[in-house]
Image 1 (cartoon, helix red, strand yellow):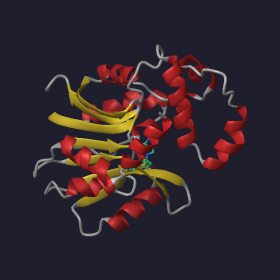
Image 2 (spheres, protein in one colour):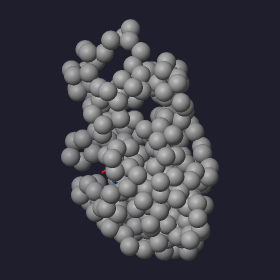
Image 3 (cartoon, protein in one colour):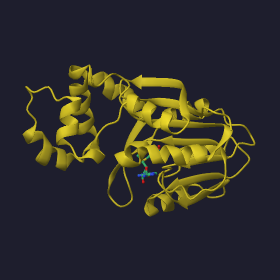
Image 4 (cartoon, protein in one colour):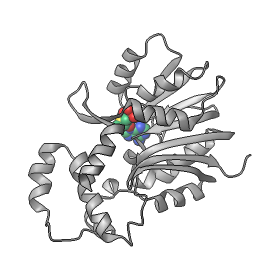
Length: 243
Ligand SMILES: C[S@@+](CC[C@H](N)C(=O)[O-])C[C@H]1O[C@@H](n2cnc3c(N)ncnc32)[C@H](O)[C@@H]1O
């Protein structure tokens, strides 16, 4: 199973080392194609890319609309690299975040890839309120992220495998090898409740149930779902009331 997940994820997520030496991830061209297809960008769409990183998704959006695309990220170095890669394109990069989007207009499309899990758990609902406030009545939010698409509380065996897998894939290698692997008991089934009891809150995974709860709080709903594996996929999210 884990080998199958490796093969699937390799198509969509690139593992890269950023200019300041950090391990990070970026959307591959195949994932960007999937995102752009899901987004159905019109020539006059106003688009915002949240957690834009080096601007890979931003540039693909800018090729579809004639308007300025806004790429927003909290990391100054990532924005510098995004600007370096985007010279001459209809893009403006801004330093901001899901929590503070520094964007006052209503967008036709807000897109985000591989970033939402980085919002602190207690701010996820607030981050979605920021999305709702910045979407036009007919606007869409296209979200690609790591999220548990199965019932993590009921399916403990699957959760155990997925959690261990994600932990190994996303933790820097030296930290995983020295600080985590020696303490993992292979005979134990690590449950959703264990994660909540023993892992700092901001490192919790989130589930589709969590997402639906935060969306309901903010007048948003999932209208389409594309899953690549049990913990990775793309959601199309739209306002419920078309105010
Ligand atoms: C894995 S990179 C993905 C970059 C790009 N979206 C892509 O798919 O190639 C995640 C990005 O999310 C940004 N990020 C971290 N916390 C964030 C937050 N609270 N709000 C918005 N972006 C955030 C990081 O700085 C980083 O550039």
